[in-house]
Length: 416
Ligand SMILES: Cc1cc2nc3c(=O)[nH]c(=O)nc-3n(C[C@H](O)[C@H](O)[C@H](O)COP(=O)(O)OP(=O)(O)OC[C@H]3O[C@@H](n4cnc5c(N)ncnc54)[C@H](O)[C@@H]3O)c2cc1C
Image (spheres, rainbow, N blue to C red):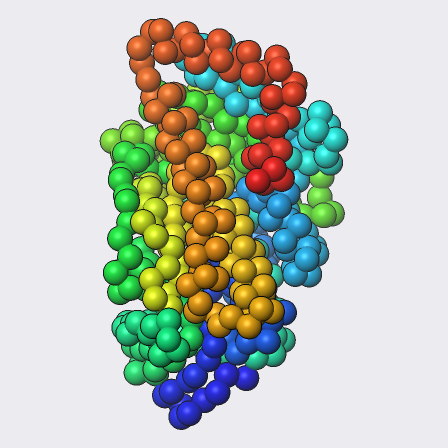
């Protein structure tokens, strides 16, 4: 249990602000260390109302393509079974192609000796599995339904940081972990600057039913206006139905606006055309959501005794489905540095410990962000020589199994 001075004062070793996918996973990782922890979120803890619990056939429009590395982490935390018991959709193949030519590249789990390339899982389902088992963690105080409003930084001499909730509770912590998402208030209050820019893309997300089965294959078509992904969904372990996909259609904001305004039948037709009828007719599409995409990266990952993880540290274009996966690698790395630091007598706010975490993760996140930016720009390019090179490039990579397998292993989070 955290040390409670009064109902309005709590004293812990580590306060995690944000119990999203990244913050909740971090709380699980810390349960293995001798630390008192508080996990705070403006949303209530307790049973989540999630689409998979509905009697109707409903899906969460927000899904994640979890890499093999993320699966291994959830297995280590005993969360994976709770996820797959509900529904997770393994995909064995992936095809990426250029709308503007004949270049294409396909990846197959078989070619790299794996049973799948990854799993598509609804975010609320992962969150529900994570939150369900938080209550049984000792030394963890769950503070839900209140937003954090203020932060007073501590220092590296042992003065604790203090965060204040909207209801006036003050939480003192030796280390504050900002897992409060892309618009992180903690990052702002800690005066950590970001490098950011607009992708000039809006992502439309929804669930669709297709005439043809997806065959456990993810599809991604790159158009000059942006990429469109079809991510195969499963209806659960007892169903062989392969007619549902989650879609992420990233496109120029004006196009997104007009697509959002279309009646369902017209939207379905546009979608079918955009994916070149690969899965036959789009028979149904659920409510659409539009998410403006912005890239952000913390210029540093810690300040005094505040450290950033997940989207609070970096937000990235969803075209390769890496956002959550990168955040999970962040918290795995931070937990490991804290473990090693404690073993050698260092405190949780020791700049040596936080610096090691930053060095481990910032370069890797930056490389991934640049790769996504490069992809986005390459496929937006209309000049003929670039289009030609793009097609030749895709075809060449596709014919080089060794290189292709290296790319696939990297995307699965298996090779650094
Ligand atoms: C369209 C789209 C598709 C995507 N697809 C993929 C994919 O396929 N694969 C993938 O890996 N990633 C994907 N991502 C990225 C992924 O969704 C994010 O990287 C991930 O959700 C970030 O998790 P997080 O826990 O860091 O932040 P969040 O999920 O944003 O969680 C932040 C938490 O902090 C809480 N909070 C915020 N402020 C406060 C406050 N002041 N006080 C208290 N609580 C607070 C919030 O309530 C929330 O629970 C996609 C993103 C988009 C936009």
